Length: 290
Image 1 (cartoon, helix red, strand yellow):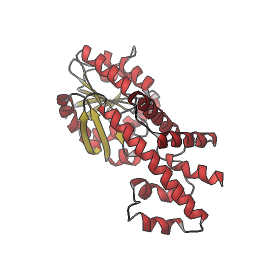
Image 2 (cartoon, rainbow, N blue to C red):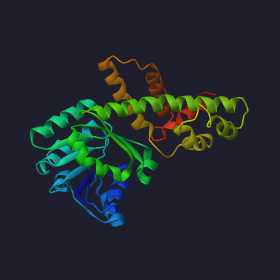
Image 3 (cartoon, rainbow, N blue to C red):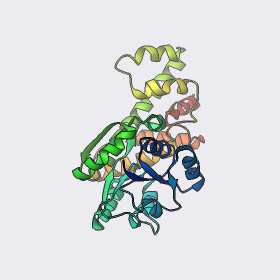
Image 4 (spheres, one colour):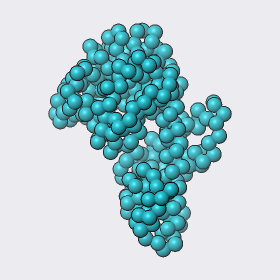
């Protein structure tokens, strides 16, 4: 069993850290809102610290799951960042969805001071985190991945090293690109069925068993039909991720016309007041259009 720190106890990080503690690891947590860390310790045991630096002292692995590029920089290299507290040869495993640019920046900074850095963004949503069945896509040195993989297996159903540093984040971008198109397609299918006077549940029961079936259809169609979107991965976060995808596409020369269009549709959802709605709320936008 290992000594670990987990930085960031949001809807994903909170249960992930809990799985690590339940598996017998010695977990120290940090969260920007300390009351969340206090609640976690009361529920799971372990310990908490007031800064990322303090949480990272004396541990073998530091796991991060925060909001964006700036949040990650702050918890890693800020004045009270984890890099300043980590022991030589310790590893930081980042589960945040961020740009490949900040990943490269932090990988390089870690290496210069004798630390290891692995980008390991996650997919599977809140339910995947709570049930310990996330998909984890990793980038970084092979030996670093080999050492960290047993830790990540505690809350994953699949964990793979895709390539060198940044490859995990680029794979996560591919994931978000695919999801954007799938959710829009599903939303249009359900909207079409509604407008045609069909029973949405009966339609999904049939088409989900054929070529149209997807995770999004199986796991989201009921709440979509019920006009319930107060759960899951928020539109604000999806737009952050799609912005990273589109910026990277401009750098690589990739063409993402559907992704760019769906990003604008999510902007419309934000204008409806749905920034915190689940990403499946694209259907609500269509309903608002009539």
